[in-house]
Length: 367
Image (cartoon, rainbow, N blue to C red; front, side, top):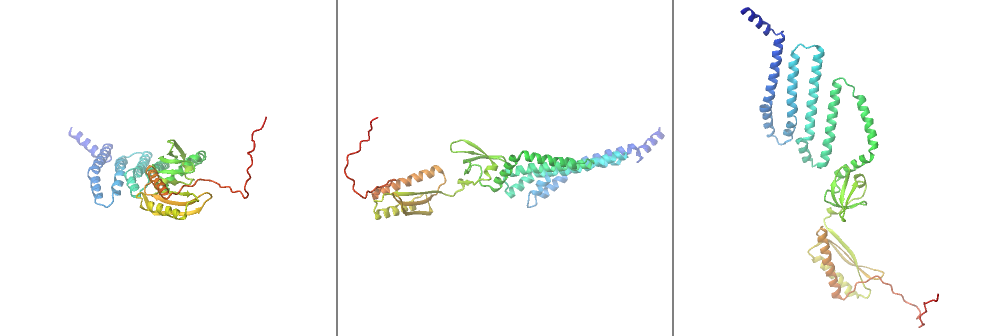
């Protein structure tokens, strides 16, 4: 009995025995799982506390992006070392090595994927003040590129030739681009609009195609609500190639017109009208004081024209109309006070010779 137990112990503790190797393998896996737990609770927490002492929060966001991939890598590394301890056939060992190298590629790809679309990229966007729609588009493109590169590198690790696939993908992309030429034009037009920022949602714009308030912007088109309450969708490729007037971004609203009075108006009364209208505008609380012009401009065909040019302080259309109406009434009051009449288009005909009194011609004809 004792001899048999001694023999079993010697065979068990023999470092070359399969039982010993399996025990060591199991121990390595358990240690890796323990380290993984310790890393999560202690080491990662300690590193995280260190990031709070720095002046930037980007390192903390970067650490969070690689937290889950690093846990995965620890398990993959432990499994690799554990399996390497067992005397496996060379083909199996080569397979395990390829798996471990693929796990490293997955770790890098996973971490970069989290960096691009996670809190790290959000903080970068906030610091650089990048538009959300641009950031969303760039995130999708970069994530696609990262995944495509990761898959291609893993395929090469397993001795798959991806050059033909990449060439075919390039030709397919070219054919797709030619077929979707208008869509690509709208996409780049949208990028130009978003980066150049000629308008934003809620702005009142005027182009050769449409006029109204912008309600929605995307990478294909913009949607404009016209003043007739119709919703017009305009492709970005069209808008980006047109002159765009953004009325919302004006600092003040302009009013200018020519006030024509009759030719029978005396010079003194005309001068009084000019002075009083200018005084009215200079003292009006809703008129911007930077530029006010009231001048007797010209002798027109049927009137003496007073040129009136000024700006209102408000940009709101309804308030602008109310101010213009008030000023128009007050100008009429000035003209009435001076006894000056507004001219209307007319033409006077003078005969060089006096017409003789002749009976009117009989315009009726017999049928």
